Length: 236
Image (tube, rainbow, N blue to C red):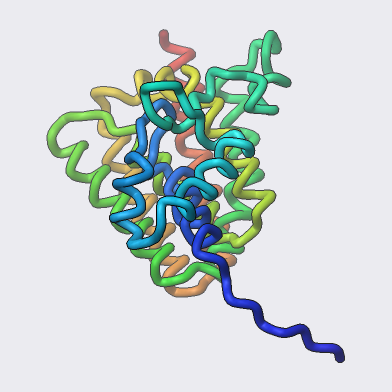
């Protein structure tokens, strides 16, 4: 076995990793303006050169967009050329049911892997998303962002870069409008309280490192949403 020397990670790589993680986890939302280079340098306690390098790489990869005289923004998913899924789906008349069926396949597997690989930070972020969603529901406010953050926290916990990117593209596509439609169907119902209970169960099983039951809990959760959407559509 040939071992390779351990190389220290560049400062700009660390800045890049943190900013990308914020975007993937939904802590920075599409269209949101991020802090200036100077502010980020102070927050990270690094040089502006390191921040600039990280921002340039994220811009090249399509995570960020620099607007002259206005700042740097998280890319809006409406730009279909930056979202392969949106480009493929254009004109295909994709329904909410279609997307939920795809999510069942992707997210059940992600939950299984998350139960094996999630860090304490991943689990903490899942739990924080649940708390935010609980508070919003108690206040009678729909909070799609908190729901998305929960599911992206699970995706990120897979430690599978390809899966994370696919999930990011999927949720970007949902931002275009289908997500709002789904929440419109759920608005004013007691189903959100049940969904929160399901989120709690999923996070608990991930925390217990129980991949089989976590897989089943996610399947039940998404099947519940799919059945509700089908039923609601049928009575509209």
